[in-house]
Picture 1 (cartoon, helix red, strand yellow):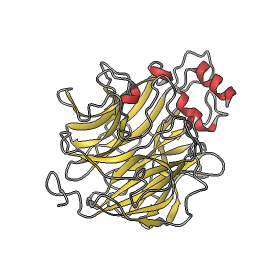
Picture 2: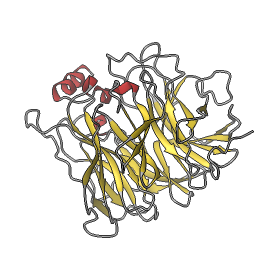
Picture 3: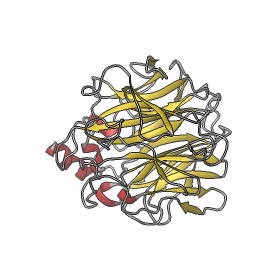
Picture 4: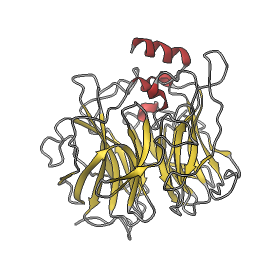
Length: 398
């Protein structure tokens, strides 16, 4: 670990990659159903090991990634009962066989776009560097729902040596516009920020995934004028993109949720909590936003230290698209709540089905003690709402 720490510092890499999540023990092997404290939620089902789940357009299938015994992530499909349908990337020819993940269906359901780590790069002996949640040394690829054909969509410069003057770049979080014609994603394009966080921007392309080449017009869409971090979460409509970042110049650990107007370049801060980490949001059909936050955590981040080994508790929260009517959805860290899992928990990337009935999310159990986060286990969860998040602006449960 000490050698890895020195290596990452010398390379200008984010120290968050010192942390590695486990997905093997501690959780039950079969799906389990939980009740919930918030009456909005009908049930919570812990499906299986994995992270970053997203629905197919018809809502019947979930695509997610999971770390395997070889230490790399691969992409899988499952049904809503947690039964694995198959792998899209494991051992498949035509793509680099390292980390794959952060996958998403396009609106037609005929294609799945995902993040794939390049085969060779600086520090390739450290498997966790290519974790798909961060996307270092990775490009976007596309495949069909059976994983039989692959197309490379981006081609970032890849650092190979310490002194080769190539910055450590990353590709993460692909998102489609409502009509499916535009794809946006997040790119780390240079060094900077606190604790080797880097500088990030949002890129876009007018993709045609049935064509060759599929890329039509790759361009930079948003570069923050104040902060150094921004990441795409999802579209409210063709002109408004929900993003997370430090667009007001706050510390990266205090990032907020924003609605960014693509026509005017103006943005609205929805959370305004510069001491709280607000990220990983998903958008319901009625325009409401669910996001993760550590606002009620018993542990406070030390902004001077790398975040990934610090203990934290995170829950899902719900708000309207203008930031009003904020409400806590989950209580995984409340020992008195029925969904309590017996230890420190943190939620992450989520997606909401197009019919508004379900949220597919990520939950991790932290098995560290005291002031250390360790051996975190990641699972895919399925939340069924008592009333679908469709129709009116609030869909509140009485």
